[in-house]
Amino acid sequence: MAKKQHNPEPMKTNHIFAILAILAGIFAAFTSHSMKNNLYPTWKFEKARVDGEKVRYISANHLANLLYQKQSLTLLDARPWKDYDNYHIPTALHLDADQKPEGGKDMVVVYGSAEEKELYRMANSQPGKVYVLQGGMEAWYSMVLFPDMLQYRVRNSDQLMFILRRSGFFGGEAQNTQLLNLNVRESRYREGC
Amino acid sequence: MEIPEIYLLLFALLTGIAFGIFLEKAGFGNARKLVEQFYFTDMRMFKVLFSAIVTAMAGIYWLSYLGWLDITQIYINGTYIWPQVIGGVIFGVGFVMTGLCPGTACVSVFTGKLDALAVFAGMFAGLILFAELEPMLEGILSYSSIGDISLYELFNVEYGILTFVIILIALAAFWFVGKVEERIGKKAA
Amino acid sequence: MKTKQAYPYWNPYIVGVGLGILIILSFVVTGRGLGAIGAFNGLLASAIHAIAPDYAMSKAAFSNYLSGVEHPLRDWVVIEIVGVCIGGLISGVVSGRFKFEVLKGPRISNVTRLIVAFSGGVLMAFAAKFTRGCTSGLALSGGSVMSPGAWLFMISVFIGGYSVAFLMRKLWN
Image 1 (tube, rainbow over the protein chains, first blue to last red):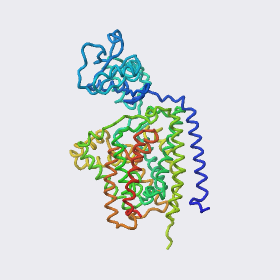
Image 2 (cartoon, chains in turn purple, green, orange):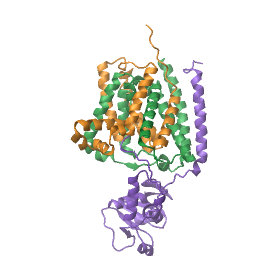
Image 3 (cartoon, chains in turn yellow, blue, green):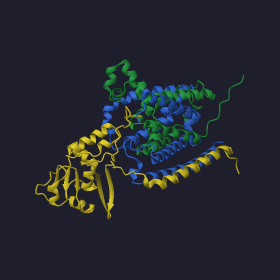
Image 4 (cartoon, chains in turn green, yellow, cyan):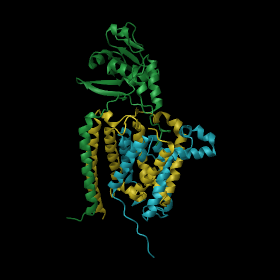
């Protein structure tokens, strides 16, 4: 057999590292469940297949940002009329309303209590790309109107202020602000590193 | 716990010194050594980069599990899909041209390599170029940003499981890279 | 005449683990990882500001920096980069690798090498601002916290590098 390139000594260290790495990984996999990593996802769009049909989701966080920035989109409420009259997301129109939403908007967001593909199909008659609000009204309440600041992934005071302001914009109020550890570590200049 | 600024800066200095020592000891002060990565004769850059990432990843996971590190408070680089892909390719081209990256260029200059000085000058020129062209690139720069998201959120898997998977992938990659080195090294020898 | 023999390089995995521990410490103490290109930008912005303040403030890349930082020497990354330089110097001298020379392949001239190095530096700095980070800031630190952008960047760097390596072999071999 041809002579090995490395002398045996470094190979031993590498083997130790490899074993340690695997052990660390196995322990990580086992303890993974107790790690709370599902803090409010701020991921904007998600695609899924519901019963074979492709459905596009939009997170409540992103929808709120779009509305807050006055982006034009068509918002449809697919819940019973009673719920709509009680409270609906600002600028939302009920699905069966006489006043049809004005066309020309290329984004349609629908929310309701029905199943996703039902909502999807209901809204598909409108022109434009259809998105289903991920988590429905509950997500809207818990992420936008009454965000629990202990759960939100806040990185700096600007972001914190934004969430508080946005919550007030829609008529809600942030929760647990007094318990929030405002000692967020801010770096002076984040654009580059 | 708020740390006074002077201690943070002192920590920065010590971290930098250690960083510089490590880079130089790995041979990255030498452009010819670094660029061998791209000719398959010495895959050091890959090894150092990924073993550092894997170590840090595992360490951060474990510290956050033990509660000594709050992962919601640390800085996660934002993801801008197209700028980072295109920029990465350009960076790779520049990398092969110079044989150095910004950090290793510092190490190289301070071990006397004059070509690294040219790289320094080029980098400053590049930064000025970028500053000049930035208004035109506004649209592309912020295009396809998906925010400060983490990989496990993106794939909707658990943090620990993904750590484990990445560790396994890295170990397999190290083994593979070692084999490539032996093969090409034998051919070249 | 006795020439000082350079020490051999360390095992890359040891360096990697050492760097990893350094990154962990950095996150624990400061909440962020390492960086390189940010320091260059900061130093450049401050230098330009000292010479031509109006020009510096008119460019977004510089004014963003200057409005956020009182003095470059109070910026974390700048001090870190100074440390990198010092560390490189110490290690280079101690290991016998300090030497004034131009590193290049045997088939090209010094001038060619310097010109190519300069152009490569332009490309790298430009790209690093584009991607908001270089290998130490984005790939290393971002990869440790599992930022998708870091992984995208790393893969792209390898793709970019390997695709032109063959074309540029005359530079190095």
